[in-house]
Image 1 (tube, each protein chain N blue to C red):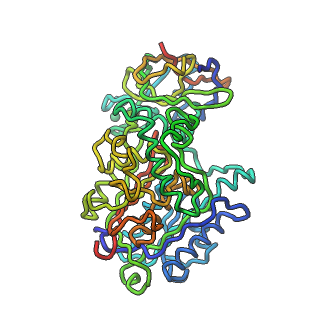
Image 2: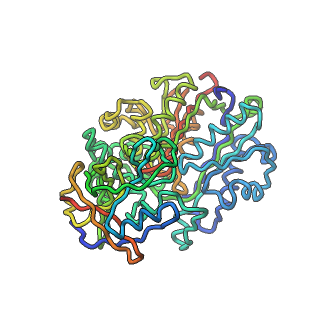
Image 3: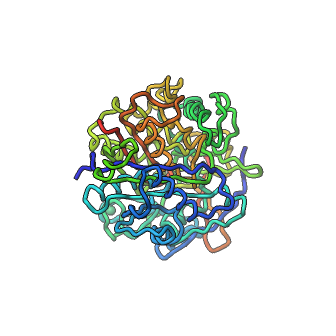
Length: 130
Length: 390
Ligand SMILES: [Zn+2]
């Protein structure tokens, strides 16, 4: 069971998340980084969820991680896989697994980011097994 | 201030309907309120506090108070999804203990099945949650967000689909005796693991039913309870805690029950061995398994073993649970199961559960609610109830 061409729903973008989504158009997966406590966080916020500092910025990730958990969702025409991916930088993020053999997925497997254009000036980061 | 012994549950009512065609949402709330007040032997004019959650139409409780013609001096529409009504028992007991009110009414109602049949559009209100842009593109569903918890629990602790299935099997053994239950057929472990996968590793029978109706509870001060005829059900202790994704430090193997449970046990001054019956929120089988571990009925990771071989079945198991058939078989009104968890715990302490599932000498019972998504952010609420001697 696999899916090669996922249906991509454009994200809701606001003042706080605009920069994150603009970066996706350049193929960059960003996370929040706090310059006070040094922690990465996700989803990115204006105030650090760990120390409440407002000295946060976006930091580019290498786009690599491991499957933390996943679920193949049944669908008569196009099953899809939702997953949490633990990035090499630390944060665990919600995403989809695409372009992969869904029957062979396993927790701990290495994955890398792949971007899907929304047609609205940004792209949704998803992951495929490597 | 402890709430122990400061408040009683005097009245309960569960709507007999599972498909509310021809009834409006406020009407269901009012019918439930009337039923619970009649059960208590009180009238609506006795009510001086009203509690409801996100299922109520309009602006919190204000619109419902107007619809029902209530004249209250305390109102609380805390919304923590399906766990709200367990939490409301706690808040009502706190308000009564502090002297702010004497008769608190809590209602839950919903008609998702009728809405679907009548093609009523879902109308989300207010600003979307802050995480929405980072989640909705990935098509999260209620089922797959719980399924990821099951997947991770299996990976870390070796939990199996067969062990999860035992939870549904136990619920079905109870549901056969409930004339109002949506699904009354007894199922086996094989039936569960052979039912279709909805979102791996969860099968159709790992999921709760979708029903209409609701429930209501009346919480009263001791001086009110004294003059009522119904068996006294004392609020012994309660706890509540939201849990979330912690800025990306995600752990799907436990729920907020890890924090709400110990607080409730401490306030009640009871131990796990004292709990004769437990209503455990059962949106999915995995919800029950993680909650049982987090409440401390077994070690973390041992839940699979604990729920197996009928250990949750009344009469044979060590921890009889959801003797009304639970959300898995009986009722999950408005997609919110916390209310029915309180109702069956009250029936057990009163000795009014179905004779086939009534736990003998059920002096102390626990009710636990889970709201939102176990796989993202949730509200957890626990309350412990007992009879007059507890
Ligand atoms: Zn910080």
